[in-house]
Amino acid sequence: MNKATARSHSNIAFVKYWGRKDEVLRLPTNGSVSMNISNLHTTTTVEFNPSLSQDMVVLDGRQVKDEQKRVSQHLDRIRKRAGLREFAHVQSVNSFPAGTGLSSSASGFAALTVAALSATNLNLSEKEISILARQGSGSACRSIPDGFVEWIDGDSNETSFAQRIYNPNHWNLVDLVAVVSTTKKDIPTSVGQTYAQSSIFFNERLRNMTRKIEQCKLLLQEKNFEKFGIFVEREALEMHAVMISSWPSLIYWLPNTIVVMKHVQKWRNEGLPVYFTINTGQDIHVLCEEQHASTIKTLLSQIEGVSRVIKNNPSKGSYLLPDHLF
Image 1: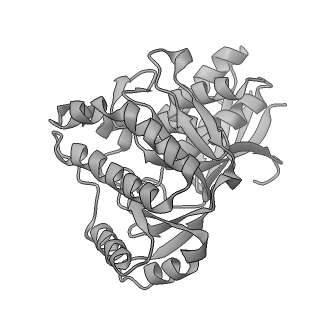
Image 2: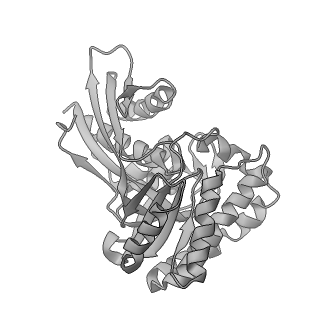
Image 3: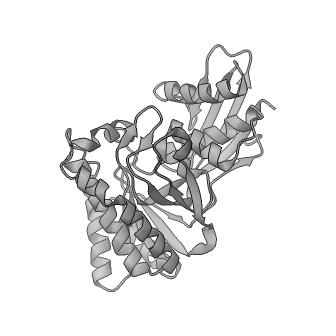
């Protein structure tokens, strides 16, 4: 087989990582806890072809140059492992806006990894696939296992990987993504990560991470939504405090991002159990339980500046699909 198609889901981190201790291996300065989400996914076909003189990358119907080098470098890791020299045609489609803080690189490099491994007939364990995906994009390792996931903080390539904590059906959490802009952010996450340690808050945040990860896993076990929501919202704001206080300063939010935050706080004060979290971008995740999802989705849709609301449930991670999709 020289062709395969894979689908991977984006993930939302409840305990986030910000900063790396190894830029080449993309080893994070701390572990993290996340959930794969159902309707934010990337579908990628990789076909190795001896007639190609270089890799060709088509993203959402458009041949891209800016991402081609990074994709080729990741394919080189797989080619080296497989003893293959052929270049590849890579065709990838996102179900959501890329480069807006919705972790498109996570789903993208996870799908690329799984498809390329299958196309080269490499049969690796889930742990090995997670390790490999991490080298393409750190958070891609979390999009390999199913459901609720922990990314283990390791100091070497072999000890930093993601593993499942709970299956997708563990808890009926809903993640409503409010899209406030589809414009790509100015500073990519991979660049912003290098600023992290310039913040005066960075070391204090790092000092508490082991405790926070254990606390998050306990809250997931208990399924107390109020305690969990408070924890997750505070964690997101803490990470952005590090970003805002770094140099150069990273302010990923747009005015409408803050508008959604204020509405979520208002609804909560009025008795609706809802919380937000946000990654490295302007689009925002709004968390609730299934019984309140329809009401909150309607409220979000009515906010001026929100162009789209995407409902997500906990989902599986990465998997192969029939390669005739494209």
